Image (cartoon, rainbow, N blue to C red; front, side, top):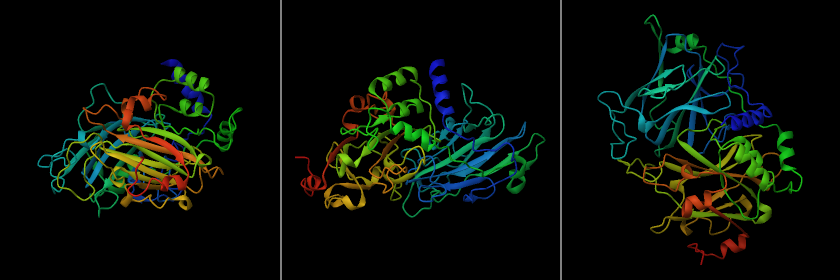
Length: 445
């Protein structure tokens, strides 16, 4: 879709999306004093660290980045151990933080003598959990090789990859108790480099720069003529929209006609902000001017039980899902998240209720004992001074082949409610008193 790509490029031109590698500084650099693991990995990037709360991380998620340049004829190997966690993956990125190639843990073949414990029914407690992934500096072919990540250089210079771990087992560290994959570089002449020699040969860098929307551009969107700048783009009838691309997000601040026009011109899915290729996302704008409590309710897809170190994970409708309060694209910060295992469900239909409020507005029955999860709203709102406004984000990771009601199945920014049916997370504004009137256990009746 040439027209769509041109429109996306025009929108991106309005925002200073900076490549995270600086070609003029090929030496290892860390100007923002980011955490590192050795000379190769930068991170962990987490929501809890103000320096790394970038690109909307989930609070149950940690990720580590690597920026490097593979010499001609060389092959980078990553030797790792499957984590004691719900999920892990590798993604390689293009210039504006768009995933171009990925490997989920479930697709990785283990080393000889090891097993892949991420697959349903396998022994999650096994000590034999090793794997090896190759990273090549080229675009992904139509038939990618097994256990290979294709990391084409950014603007012909640096390659850019992320390693993610979701929901470590209770008592495990951010890496799921398995540490990070260890890099080695086999040069064209057969030599193998590790450690500082590898990083020097790769020109490894830790110079990560956030890709933020200018506050002036965001302010202009909020102040779109005919819209209330205190609430825009939130509406009294809260709703989630699937993320397809940046032009569609920008159009949400405008009229319905402009939103439809943006979708007609840009129907492609183009990730930004270091999207996970194994996840699909929806966002919804909120404003507490419509009510003290935003009750999010629906049916929860089933997910594998792993948090307490279960020996085997069963098949499920999704690998993971979560709900997060986030700021605007001017900061890309996450405040708080709840993931599936933290949200109580009831009945065969697995119904749930999440009370999303400011700390001072938390209802007395917004607690697990009442069958309600509580998600605290960011006291900074959208991060631009609108303390009552912001956004919610929800992600769905890897649906099973037999589940057709996930975010993955939504075909437009306007059709999630109809296409997801009962699994669509509906939002209802109400007062604190009204929410409490539903009792404990909470009941809509």
